[in-house]
Length: 151
Image (tube, rainbow, N blue to C red):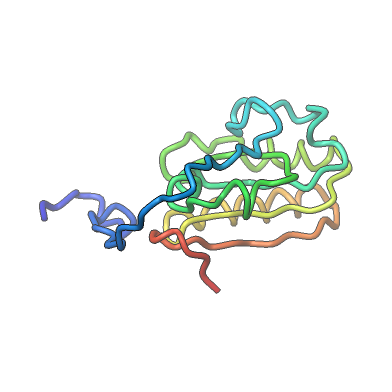
């Protein structure tokens, strides 16, 4: 493998071995997305879908790694997605704090990948929650590169 120069273990090329399964159902999974936009840079802090909501703040890669993400994590929640490694995260803590302050939030779930660079999203959400001064239940979920939830 060529040296990528960044030294980040999350950038290491890996192959995920899976057993082939025969799809006999022909049933497509339904999208559980309830709003647009979803990118953290684009969501308005006072958007009506955040009011009295359970919020999922999700690293971009989670939806691709976890085939059941819509049913297992997103169903019934408002969504904001971000990548702590590739996005310009300047202002993310303030934006999240503004969302928390502008709305009555029932709960926050943060879904990140198991790679080290993804932990920054969880840190930003925790900082924003502290900055908001609100006491909102917060759950952190870590998803493996194989799509499975880690303990």
